[in-house]
Amino acid sequence: MRITVSGPPGSGTTTLARYLARTHGFELISAGELFRELARERGMTLAEFGALAEKDVSIDAMIDARQKEVAAGRDRIVAEGRLSGWMVEDADLKIWLHAPIACRARRIAERDGTDEYTARDLAIQREDCEYTRYLHYYGIDIRDLSRYDIVLNSEHWNPEALGAIVDVAIGALKKPRAGS
Image (tube, rainbow, N blue to C red):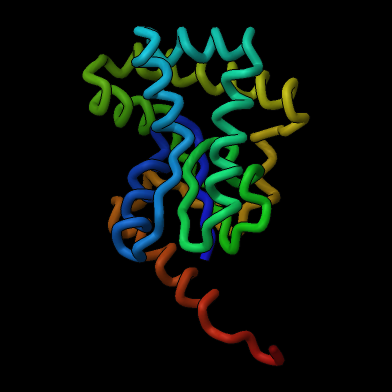
């Protein structure tokens, strides 16, 4: 089974992807973690590294190609990242998480040790930056959610409840379909 988990910063994609990897024994492929790691290696904040990626297409191209390459050779994966639903085209289940900006800012502030106002502003900047980059580089409108099988508002459920919802979907996909 091949699953993708996407959504804006602070929506809980990494948390859900880790849950699915742990619970179902999937290999986790995280574009977000790779992006963070590259920013750290260069001594840059995510916003600074995002601004650099706006000018240097090779950064996104490398991350996206890597995720696509790793995902293509494996069957039991959960791929997490903003473009995972686009890059892992033959995924069995594509999930989009979202939450209001106030909720996401609170989560980002807790995770990164900053205040909510700064987290909110940085999240909005990052979303705008990514929207522009992906539209320009790939012709992908990441605000178009029509390719996703499940769209969930992660503000309403804790990580275990989100996982349980997705577990039901995974279980349903594993059952033979009538007439098959």
